[in-house]
Image 1 (cartoon, rainbow, N blue to C red):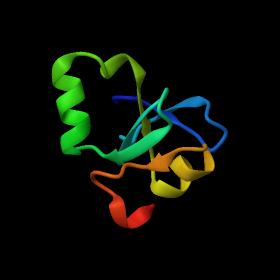
Image 2 (cartoon, helix red, strand yellow; image 1 turned 90 degrees about the vertical axis):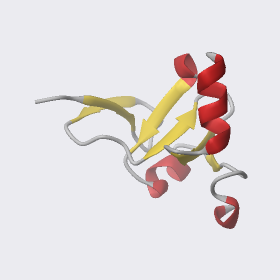
Image 3 (cartoon, rainbow, N blue to C red; image 1 turned 180 degrees about the horizontal axis):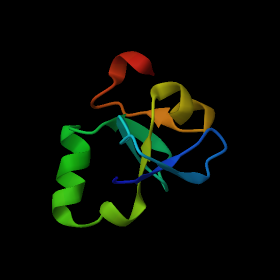
Length: 77
């Protein structure tokens, strides 16, 4: 069974058998959709991947201190 590393409400990583539904940037403390155009551009440039984190859901991302992406989640700000 495949395992995924997600961040919990305390901002610490944990193992899960379910993949995350949202991605985030550890340094910018931003989270958004996995298909966010802005995140995909940064990934293509190679600057983003080492700082990428994943969350099970929006409540967990917010509890961990991350804010919504203005590009893909402007209605959540």
